[in-house]
Amino acid sequence: MTTQALTFPAVTAVGNLDAYIQTAQRIPMLSEEEENRLARRFHEDGDLEAARQLVLSHLRLVISVARGYLGYGLPHADLIQEGNIGLMKAVKRFDPARGVRLVSFAIHWIKAEIHEFILKNWRLVKVVTTKAQRKLFFNLRSLKNALDQEQGYGEPHLTRQQVARIAKQLGVKPEEVTEMESRMQGHDLALEGHPEEDGDHAYAPIDYLADSAYEPTQVIARQEHERLQTEGLEAALETLDPRSRRIIETRWLADGEASTLHELAAEFQVSAERIRQIEVKALQKMRARLAGLADGNRPADSN
Image (cartoon, one colour):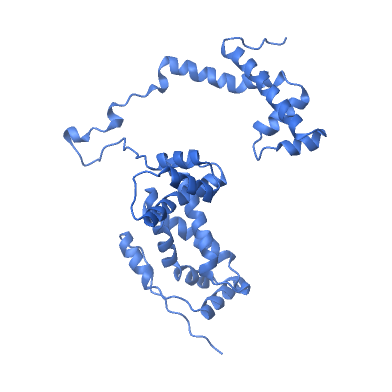
């Protein structure tokens, strides 16, 4: 039995985002049978045209998902582009034998790529370091809007009760919610003026903000900080016994995930509380050594 080939409109370069969205919206949706047939052609026969049709038929899904992240101040086109990367990854991994439609499978990959793009390019990336903070980062606005609708009115800032409810729901501390809200309500300032502006309007902060990086006292302070980060840290570690040094290195200086108190307790066959006590004393000893170095007491050279 022969199957009729699907007809997709030609997708060529478009001049603006609106034209792209209109083009994507005209691409027909796939039935479950068509979707499964294309997926089998791609995975069993390596048919790239089948993969292309799967991607094209779900471009509207990416547009819809990306629209939900416009509040982060990043261009909609960039969000769509990253979402499309997630869609292509989903098509590559999609297995119709699991009984799940591609739309349900792909949405995870689309959101994951958009999340990663936002975290890499938005100014708040430095404060989003844990899984709980990422969850707070991506849900704070929607949760506040839901609470405002529930109350029938909205406040410019979260109330104490709203902070407590959001913190409980997301499993973070109330002060983390407050800090994240204050950072998210901040505004970026353009340092450079618009190239078409002239006269007084052409001056932007980049023209009158001084660069203090090469000011002599800043250079000296930076050099001293770098010294403490290298030889100072090593000198402080040398003041510790092997067990204490092992605890500090695995708890505070590990490149990957830090060891827990219980893991170290099992390694040294002592209680977790004993490991904590050793850690506290070791840190105190290191701080004292670093304080001495900061006052100019460099470690003596060994000849």
